[in-house]
Image (cartoon, rainbow, N blue to C red; front, top):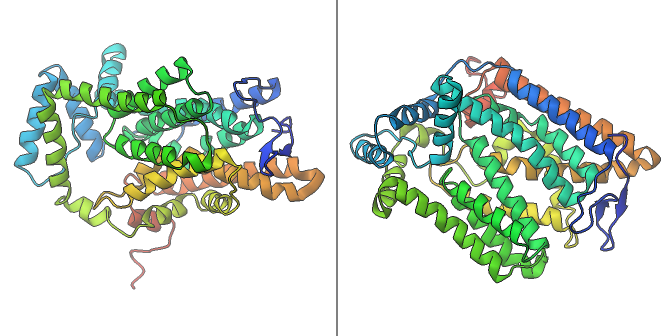
Length: 425
């Protein structure tokens, strides 16, 4: 990171890297690129070979495995009908087979490489956790330049949440990738209105997000919120083509899922029975409730320093800091909906906020290190390394020592010795 250019002031008075790219520019220095490749390699090795080894299959993983094993025995509409009938006759909430893309890619991996079903799903989760690294780097570069790209990449590489989703056959990191990809493509379309390549990529990205998980609704809601405040925030241009592509991407995703389910009525029934069963599921009632700040509390347990820095950045925002406002808008608008889902809160769902939060945290760290004068670059390097080391330690405590699987508040507090079950209290 020593070769990264210094920070300069933008014309609007905000802090931005001197290397912040001109609109449409993709130029990056050789030193910064080499450093990013080394960090990405370290993150890849950590995700492929880091502890703990995949030895257990949790509740969600068993369901995904079951769907893959049913594909060769029944058509997809039949699988959907089995799910609907099962949910009508049981008090247990099961994840729907309409999380199609994750299930289908797991099936393709199994048939291509001959691995067992659970290992195939784990491979998909691990692969997309690795792909999140170059995505985070490119997105951060387009938002703030090469120095920011290196810093955000480093923080994302050693994020406990990002490593965690790579070690389990869970959909959250997979969906997080598509959500962040769509967010980046939205930014590019706002800054480069009318460009066919960005519009096409954005539409395809939204379609893939929809056929991945029903949580894509939160992403769409956030995008609508960003468009609504754009006249004030001036992120870029919201034109008719962007609106049409947003609608088309979502509609195409729904159409694909409806066709796979055997019809629109069957597709809608999947989510009706899912919502009804979820409100009575004992585990969701016990662990998925809480006040609106539940997500903030859980994130503070896992990433305390990063979250504090990100919150600090929020209080430093001005309207000229477009990139930071854009990311805050995405987090804020989706947060408002997610924290109001009855019995539906889990820290795993926040994976799509991880990179945006780390961008805000790095920007705040840059601002703090600016006070070091001529030593601000070494201070920034040291601060970034310290944050990465601390996050790696958090991962080790929670996921290696305590082997957490479900990221519920009780388990998190116990792993950090905040609550001791055998204290005699």
